[in-house]
Image (cartoon, rainbow, N blue to C red; front, side, top):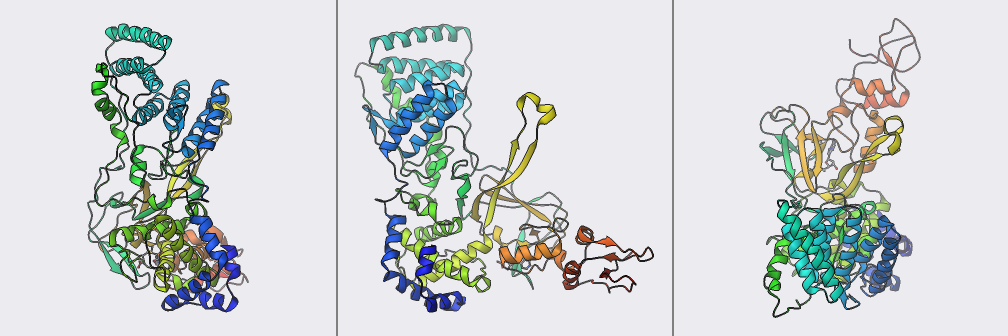
Length: 598
Ligand SMILES: C[S@@+](CC[C@H](N)C(=O)[O-])C[C@H]1O[C@@H](n2cnc3c(N)ncnc32)[C@H](O)[C@@H]1O
């Protein structure tokens, strides 16, 4: 980015830096023409989007090396490092690669299942065994491991079934004999104990059954653009809005710790994308929804006389039921265009990657047959292009051009790239900066020494921004430093509740960050101007309120004066509050005063 910026000649820089929304088609096409004649630009796009040079492609050599390392850690009893190596190996292993005549990915799942079993993580172990047998149904070791974990889970019917398949698939006589004796013990045991059914936890993203009961309306306000009001009185704590994101992307610092689809924390048995080495998912369902590819199973090696295999296909489909995902008609795969080993999604900033997802979504819905494609979909979001800094205008022009070329290279659609399409993406980036919501999770860290929990432990709770998302209706809620609603997230779902009683016709407003009583007024105003490019017009910033004063005010030194003393910057800020500002009282003290109403 810095490289491209430095190559733009000064006159063009000035033209872009001082552009208005109306000039955008012209400034965009001028910059585009300049880049198209520049060798370095084409090289940068090839580096970012070329599949041959992509560092995020699958790589069998790295996978084998990591598997080897994992095996060494396993043998030395270092299960944490073994697990990490197997997961890294899974990330880079091509789905169709073989290692010693066995599918490498299936082998890695079985190895990781062994680690999970050693760590007593039985459900994770079972899930990895399921993944292995789904890829490679004739894999004796996978069935054996599955049988063993089902024994631990007291799931005797499945254990007997699995070990019987393992015995039939085992090639060595000694192996067959060992499994047979284990089977005998289990059969004896299962005659004595009753079966316990393992409850598989379904990864259901419809996290809340509670439905929104109130009717809201979008209105035009005098000083904040559009906003949301209630049509009826709403009690405190009511759910007023719930919405799935239009587009979402994971934060860069959460790529290794959170599922790239649902944004929940990754389990120990995270699974990778089947085509590239970037995303990790918590389940097949999330991977399917994000746009991974469907497995191509190895052909089943069937023994004609082997009656156990008659129902094997059906058995596998039963035990891996949760693994399959059949997208609804309207479903848009949000990771597909970032796949195939290209690495621009890792390099470009999150808001630009999010813009890419919006563009692909609208192109998938509407097609790109026209000269001026509709790249903004039906978003109708506000933007702040006129207010952004000259530097930022130039950056968003460059990002828009680079993004469109990366999409064209890696996604393969014939997108007309011209002044009109670039200017739409510039506006889109500006819309995302004004309207995107950071999806957050609360993380607690225990820094206690386990032996001395009661004496020396400390627990901190911190808010982690796990993703960035666009919610079409959710972005219509305005900001107030005295909010009456609160937004939170369940998985990717935005939920909004009232924090107090809201009378009919009142605006529903949430806090984009600071609130009255937490920061003083001038810091809040500055923050909102810097981050969101607007001068806050909320009641907290336009009316005098005690919380703002007590933060930095002192009693007057004159014991007969009931006024409070403010420092100059605070006084100026309070003076700017337009309504209800009382006159500054007369007092002999020279410090700036404000009379507080009794
Ligand atoms: C997420 S949008 C909210 C919906 C927006 N009002 C609209 O018409 O689309 C954020 C923008 O709304 C406006 N806004 C929100 N809260 C505001 C406030 N307290 N004071 C002034 N403008 C506000 C600003 O223009 C801000 O950039």
